[in-house]
Length: 434
Image (tube, one colour):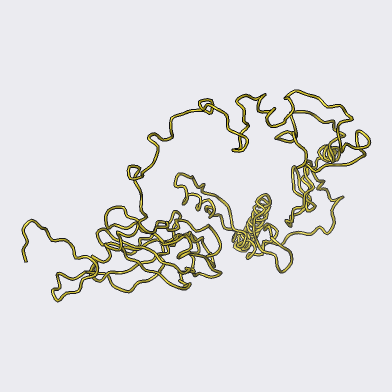
C-alpha cells in the first residue's frame, strides 16, 4: 500500500506476517538489540564481554585453555549485535609448542552467520600463529571477538607458564541513559556558583542553632564560656597530673606520639662507625677480599684465579696456587677426539629477549654466540657444564665458557698425536721401499 508523505523503514521487533518482506528479519532484530547496548553508531554495538567476570581465559598444566562462563557481544558492520556465550567453564585445546621459536595464540568467540555465507556453529576457539623469531599474529574468523592472547614459548608444556595473558576483551554493556546539562532543572544559574565567603553573611547564628551567638571571636569565646586565647593556669589548679614529674619510667607507641617528623630518619645527620652494627665485620671482609657471605646454591668449583664465587657464597679477588705442591689425585683427562668435535658452536637468541621484542617492536634482540649445556652433557663433557642440583637430580643449566680453552688444547694434542703417527708410518713405508 502506498502512502503519500511516508518512507518505509526496516521492520521493528517482533513482527510476524505472511508477507516475508514485512517480517522482522534476523538482521533487524540484531540491530534493535544493538541499540540497547553501548554503540559506536546507531545500531552498531561496541563489542566486548558483558561483565568483568565473563569469559575469563586461564592457562592450565597442559596445552589447553579454560574459558569461564559468561556472555559477549560480537558484531560486524551493519549487522547489529550477535549476543552469545556459555553458562559453564569449557576447555579449549591448542597445538604443542615449537621446539625453536615462540608463537602467538588468540582465544576467541564467534557466531557464524549463514546469511553472510559463514559455515559452522557458534564456538570458542584458538587461532594459532606460525612460530617465528618475531611471531606474527594469526587472523581471526570474520566477526570474532578476541577474548585473550598468549605468547607460547618454545618447548612449553603448559599454557599456565611463561608470559602473562594480554589483550583481554574489553567490557561492554547496556546503553545507559545520559542526561544533558540542559535537561536538569533546579540547578544554580552558574556552576560552580559565584565565589563568596562567610564574611558576606551578616548577623549572628544563635547557640540553639549551633552557632556562637556572637559576631566576633572574643564575644564568641565569652558566649561559649571559653577562656581567653592567651592565658595561664597555676600548677596547683591542674588535676590528674602524675605524682612525680617527669613521671616514672614508661613508654609510648609510635602512633601515640604527635608532632613526629613526616619522614624518618629526620633531617640529614651522621653516625660514628661504632654506632652501625655489623659495619666493622663488613669492612674486615672487604679488606680480606670478600665481597659477600650470602649463600648461593650453585655447584661450581672453588679454586679459580682473579674473581670467583665460591661454594660458601664468598666472592674473592686474588689468586689460587696451581702448583703440584697443593694438589692431589692428579690424573690426565681422557677426552676423545669425537667428544671434543661434538661441541657445537651456535648462533642463538634468548627467548626472554624475543618476548620483550614482541611486546615492544623497537626493542633490539642481540644475536648470541655459544654452545648448549645439554649437548656438552650428552657428549660426556660434564666438566664444562654448570648443573642445577646434585647427583642424579642434577640438570644442565649453563656452560663454563672459561674452561673451554682446555678443550682446544686437548683437541690440538690429539691432532699432533695423529700427525706424529702419520709421520712414523710414512717413514716406515719409505724404508720398506728402499
